[in-house]
Length: 471
Image (tube, rainbow, N blue to C red; front, top):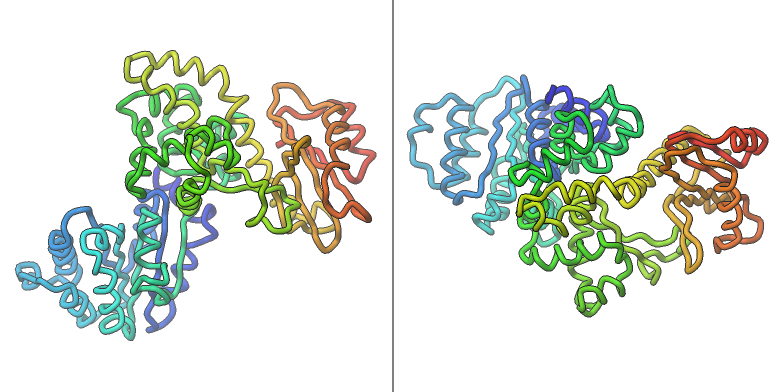
């Protein structure tokens, strides 16, 4: 089952990256230097393992041990790979010798060398990227070999292999960053769940394969939360601490910022006020969280210069972190004192209203791109997001700059069908949107998890500018 899930993720969720690796491998005698980034190491391990199956491959998983211990382990892997008892019993003090020994061995097909969790080698010895640069330039670059560097600590991998200052900068032949699984594939993991249940699961697991696997073992969303999160020995109970302490040094400062945003403080000034810290002092922390794909900065879709816009709002991008900082972190004292039922009652009371309903907007945006690719409208939009000003908020806004077309939409995660009044309210907001007021065409789209009333359906059937999506 786990392998099946990995294959779905492998095939569909990450833009066919297996094919990209296969293409790199089939480049004749040319060398390949591939870097793979993954937010979740276990998924990357399984997928890389699947790729090298039945291939002439050496897989080495680096650890947080010393460089010498990693070198000893790598030597044993190499000895096994080339079937050399002599090397296995040798005392090797040099990485170069090990890689040279591999390349001096005759192979029937191009060998694949995988260095997983590569960042730990650079962590144990900051000079290791320079060492590997020399190995690549002097030993591997002109040989028929494929090298894959894989890592799950994004910031460290980027500084060691992607940054301009890195010795390995510019030497890759390809780069792949594994993404979280899009919502549209969730039915593959939970074939017996209806769409509402799938959205609820996605709102917590956020497309992370390991989280999906854990939740698939439970009958419903609340039993999964109880077992995996509210249980102090559960895998996900303290996951955010583990994730952040691997990436940053001042975990407490970052936790305070994320907690403030989870509580609804999305403007820089509001975050600054809550934390009683100058806004200028927060900039570097916010940038780091954005680089780690934990936060994102949103601006109204109509802003011409997003980077300079003063209307920016900070949003927690990771679904699980958003849930955890909203419901778990503020209530850990209840959990640790043995009163997790209090926390569960709070979750049941407001999970849909204050969490799932917002994640539903992201699901709808994903659907918008699908509609766009299917030529649903007589144009293709190039920008998708939200719109807001001091008086108006609109869930969906998409622009076609060249054709002067504007799409506005609302997303309703309600128990009852959406009625005509929702469309009338949306229509009334149109005049507030300050974008190409003259000579523009406005289109409307409504998303609803519970469908639409007959009256609204009848209205939509008579209007070409209104689309209803039971999503």
